[in-house]
Length: 493
Image 1: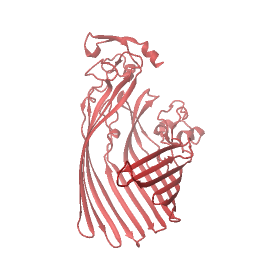
Image 2 (image 1 turned 120 degrees about the vertical axis):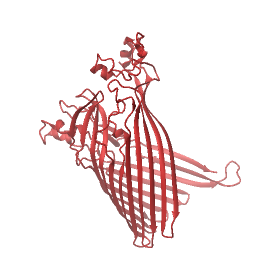
Image 3 (image 1 turned 180 degrees about the vertical axis):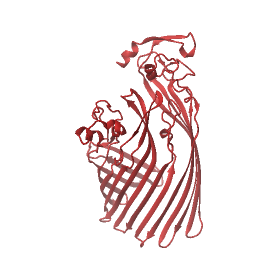
Image 4 (image 1 turned 90 degrees about the vertical axis):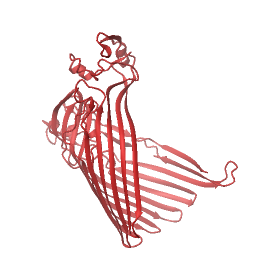
C-alpha cells in the first residue's frame, strides 16, 4: 500500500528549490524509509598524578578536558517507489494547508527537491565542553583504612541549528543560548579491620550532575525551546558492609541507600487526542534505591567450591512528578499536570536476583562453572499519562477500570542456567623452539533454551483519552534470546 500511494502521486511542485517560477514534476513520495543519524566527533585529554606522602598517606589528583560535537539529522534511505520527496513538514501541511512558510522544514531553502541520500527534516549539532579536576587522599593504618576525595566538574553545551524551521523561524536556525553547569562530588570512606580476616566498612557520597542535553531541550529537532525549570541532579548515597575471608569461606554482606532528586526527562510520542507528536517534559523526579547484597563462596575441597549471591532491593519513584506538555507543531503549553507517581516501582531491572553456582577445577589448567539464576520483582516502565488527574477523571475510584489504569505491571519470575568452562595447555606450535600457551574456553547461556524470558518492556505512551481503555495500546515486551554460546581459542606467542 505504501508503494502504491507513492506510485500514484504524480505532482508538480512550483517554485522548486526556492527558485520562483521553477517547477518539478514527478512521483512525490508521501512515505519513505528514513535513517536517523547521529555523528560524533570527540577529543579527550586526561592526566593523573600519584604519590606516596609517607608510609601512611597517599595522594592522587587528576584533571580532564573533553570537547565533543554531536550532529543529528535525518537522511532519505528509500523513496519507496516515488521519484522525489519534498522537504515539507507533513503535519504542518495538514494543520496549516494555506501557509507556504509554516510548512517548510527549512525556510532558507524552501520547497527543496530531495532524492535518496539527502538530508531533510531536521539538522542540528550539540557542541559540548566538559572539564573536571579531582584529588584524593588515602590512608592505611594498623586498624583502619580510609579515604576522602573531592571533584569539581564544568559542563557547557549549546545547540546549533542548520535549518530555519517554518514553524519556529526565530528559534531553530543558529546557536541557542549556552547552558553552563558547575557540579561537585564528595566521597569518603573508612574500613575497620576487626582482625586479618574480618572487616567492616562505611562509604558515603554526595554529588551533583548536570542534566543531559536530551532532558533540557524539549524538541531540539525543530527549535531551541528548553524546559522551564533546569537544575542539577542531586545524588546522596551510603553503603555499609561486612567482609569475612578464610581459606574455606569468603563472605561479603552489604547494604546501600541512594536518593536521586531533581531529575528531569523528556518523552516524545504520538498523542491521539492532539493528533500530533507531543513532548512530555518531566521535572521534580525523585527516586529512592535501598537494598542489601550477599556474596559467599564455600570451598568444599581443593577442586570443588559453591558460590551463592543474592541481591534484594526496592527501587521507588519517590515524588509526584510535574509535567509540561507541548506539541512539535506548536510552542504553546498544552497542559500542565501532576503525575501521581509516588511509590511506583522503577522499571527496567529485577529488584531481586539470586544465583547459585558450582565451580569444579580438577587441576590448575581445567575448570568449569554451572550457575543457576533466579530473578523476580521486575516491573514495566509505566506510562505517566495514565497516572494524572485528567486521565482518571470521572472514573469510579476502586473500580476495575480504575485499577487497570493505575496498576503497574510486574513481570513474571525468570530463571536461567548458564555453563562456562575453560582449559589451558603449554605446547609447541609451528616448529617453534619454545612452548607457547593455548587457551580455550566456552560459555553457554540459557542452557535450557528458555524462550519465554521477558527481559524488559514498557507501557506504550499512547493512550485512548476518550474511552480511557488501558488495553487499546498494550505494553511492549522484550524477550531474551534462547540458548546462545561462544567459543574462544587464544594462542599466546
